[in-house]
Every structure is written in structure tokens, then in C-alpha cells.
Length: 261
Image (cartoon, rainbow, N blue to C red; front, side):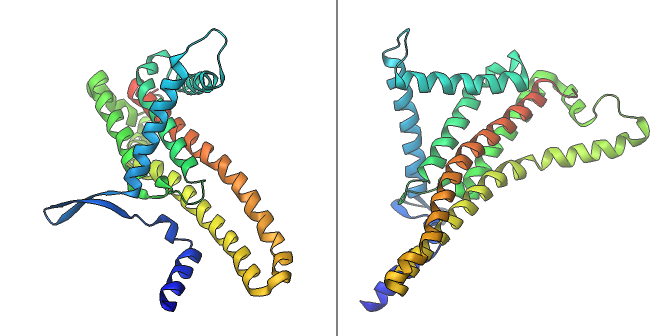
């Protein structure tokens, strides 16, 4: 019993333990690979349900003078629409459902991770890679569908002197192929690092309180203040990372709409 208690205490203090994927229901194995419903999948389904439910609630009683839910929905809509128009022009509004879904999905998942005891889905590279690949494949697919072989103009910008064109084309190809990596790692790394830092500072408070008694509570004011400040910063980062991911998506979609510009 004592060893179990020590294991639980160690897992509580471990800053990596919060990112553990836990199996909820197993559906069997396919080709030696277990198919299971995990806490990560549960929070993704929860995010979708919250977004859909919130939008349905916001638009159920549309009024000339919007209420709180309708105001939030309209502000979010205009925020994403303005971002997309600025990057791609009116032609890019055909991608609004994709861009709005990505922004809402990532933002809600990031905010879920700020609630103690919940799970940070975007701290897992497999999730952010999947989202980045969705954008990457969309850009390639639509780029060739709309522009045909003219899509290759993306790798040879106009106005480049012929003697450095091969080098520029090589750099552009490498830059294009590395997009999914940079797109996904930026979101993953920021969410992972921020939550690890929060966990470490919060752990200092518990260690000082249990190890030094009353004096520990006094000394613990500093890490407590840092934890509060970092929590506020992480809330900002949760929004900023959703914004940055969406902004990069808009920029990449513009390449599919207007290659070579």
C-alpha cells in the first residue's frame, strides 16, 4: 500500500504524466494494432460537441440586438472571416468552413487543457501533424485542381533573375515540403512547454508546503505568484497558438489560390 502511495505521489509530481494517453474502451485489434477510444479522442469529441452546441444555441434565437451567446458567435465569425479575407481576398471565403473549424477546434482544445484535471490534446504531436497535413493536402489538391501545372509557379516567383532561379526553386521546394513540420511543431511545442512549466511551478508549492510547514507557505508565495502569472500567460498563448495556426493556414491557402504571387 505504501509503495502504491509513493507511485501516486510521484506521478502527481511528474510534469510529463499529465500528457499520458489513457485507454477508455478497446474495440479489439486490427493487424496487431489495438483500436481503442482514449481520453484524447474523448476530449476531441467533447470539443466538437461544445462548438456545435454553442453555435446552435447562439443562432437558435437570432435577434437584431444580439445576446451574449450570439455576440460571441458573431465576433468569432467576423474575426476569422476578416483574417481569411486579408490573406486570400474574397476568393478565399470558399475555405471559410475549414478555417473557422480549425480555429474553433484548436482554441477549444487549448482552453480545455487550461482546466485542472483535463487533458491537453494539442500537446500531442500526432494530433497537430494530422491537422497540419489536412491543410497541406488541401493546398496541393486545390492548387492543382484550380491552376493545373501553373501551380508550380509557386516555386518560381516572378521577377527572379535567371542565374539564381535554380537555387530559389530548390529553397522554395524545401520550404514548401517542410510546412507540415513547422506548422505542427509550433502548436505542439508551445502547448507542451507551457503546461510542463506550469506543472513544475505548481509542484514547487506542494513541496515547500509539505516539507517546510508554515515557513514553506511563506516561501511558496513566489512560486504561487509565478504560477498565477504563467496561467494568465498560458491563456493568452492558448488563443495566440490557435490564431497563429489559422493565420498560417490562410497564408498557405492563398498559395493555392494565387501561386507565384
